[in-house]
Length: 101
Image (cartoon, rainbow, N blue to C red):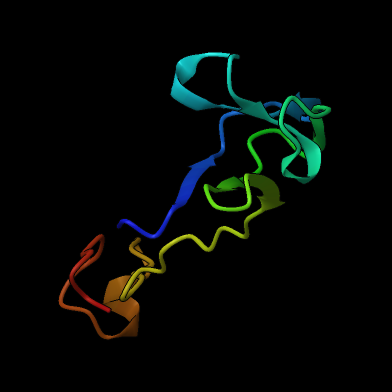
């Protein structure tokens, strides 16, 4: 969106300890590590559980990369039907009717 903040969210890493830094132009000739330091040290981070969501956010002005866990709230359905042989007993026209709430 032109604000100089580049973000990437992933849930593809297994649990473990990792390190990262930013490489500009897909080359190590310009790179930034911890604190936005040119050629600086790697930035350590931990994935607490398999496939935990992480947000990588790079600020092109300060050259700081932040790596933070991101809560994932799965979308909630608008309705849930418990279909089964009980439905005719509780007022549905018939059993196994997914359309009868």
